[in-house]
Image (cartoon, rainbow, N blue to C red; front, side):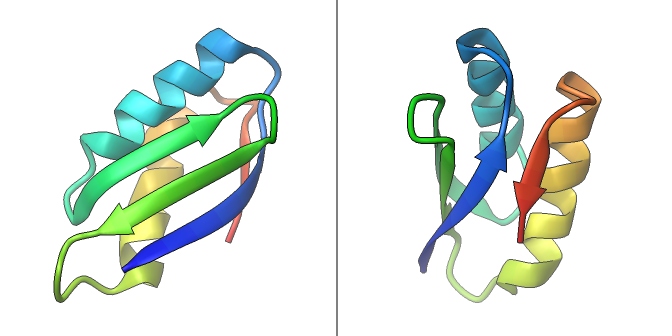
Length: 72
């Protein structure tokens, strides 16, 4: 399952760090962060609950970029 989320991030480098953090989160098959459109696309592994996984993605993103926002 693939879902798109609106984000707020201040720079392209921060967006790349968020993308890496999201990809390393358990339950995420793939993740892409687009700084220009301020969107994150997350593809979840089969059988994963999107809400539970996204809570972990947000925690991981906040560790690398405390000022970021992910609207779930």
